[in-house]
Image (cartoon, each protein chain N blue to C red):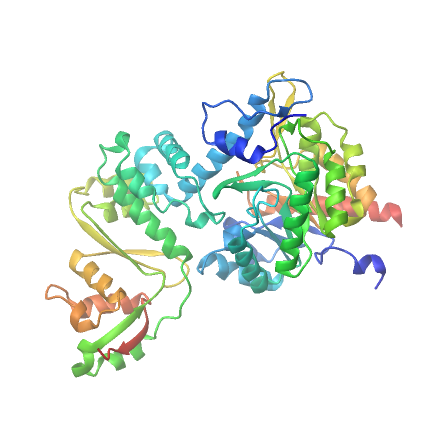
Length: 259
Length: 289
């Protein structure tokens, strides 16, 4: 009888540490070294979690290649294993890890691509809400004098990204259905160009729409609950920006601010 | 209704089912294939909204549903994660599944979730903890659950009970049912050099409410002896079909799920395996008649 009464702690101490010996107190029917058998558990843990990250970050993986991605994601898993069995929320801080991962330092846009892909995951699983019909919104906006006090509730899936790099174009280029189209699209991208995007889920798919940085900031201010008069800066084409939201089902409620 | 029907620990049909994968949502809704039931992993649907719920609601409206948890850590050292139980209760309330099942395994420790089904020694301490956890699950969810026998790769010096005896005792003490994973039984028996028929016969077979079938991968241990890995990434192996045949001869027809979680083929490939299970059950029915 072994003195090791706590396999949970023994396993936990070494599952994510590939160079540590397997836990004590294991038995095999043929007396073989249990290390090889324990390696199945180690492998399951790392591979399944790296797979989960690969599902969430397909374009990051495409940008660095599968081998690099799996090595980087494996490092992340060992440092930041999940704290919840709901893996839809796992990997939120992957972008921050990528930003400080020295081997990826040559790709300064990589962390922002991870941010964009994470926002896409969030938008994908966010709560459902019925968009306000365009006619209702048009009617509410007709009262021009009250317009500056109007507040909007945006769709729960709506997200906004701003980046110092051309990650929105880069993401779009990776959606091309064949290699030639992708190569053409990639060749036209100036990676140093700052870009922004609106992410919305008008039906079942998340749509990523390039917007200018001023419009992105405007959407962020609306999302924070600021009335239109405060949210709209001088540099925003208000009609175009609101039109974009309405077309993609981004507004679920409109109210007058009493403040 | 007979007494055996009343005490049956599941409301799933005695038919072939398939694990539900997002890759197959569209095909299922467009073609409504003759599949006996679908099973989901509970944790994948613990999200606020979006396409997963959209499709599951529509599929559930037309098919019996099994909800299968993979993250409750029933074999864990600490208390159950009550927040996770709350999420399960919400999901079960929303979809009203014909069956809820979880694993004889642990996956979380000190707030780290390992996303794997890890083994525990079979002794009085684990037995008391597992039974307390199952009591709590059944109390919180207001229904009885099925417990799945594990696929394991190591055994513990500290174990004092055989796995089948351990499971029998859990079923006796908690009143839970058994999800007999025939692939797990086969994998564990090969890995630990046990006779799979003896193992099955030692299980509390009257409590079986569902069967799982899946594919495994083959490796070898440090001595060169076979080490099977429960990969869910291949068709059901012939040896597992043979063991299923043996199980159905003992049990009669059972809700039988084809599990596939990686290298996922077209739905028709999985449906064909589900129908193969139904054909096998029908052969036994004819023999019995």
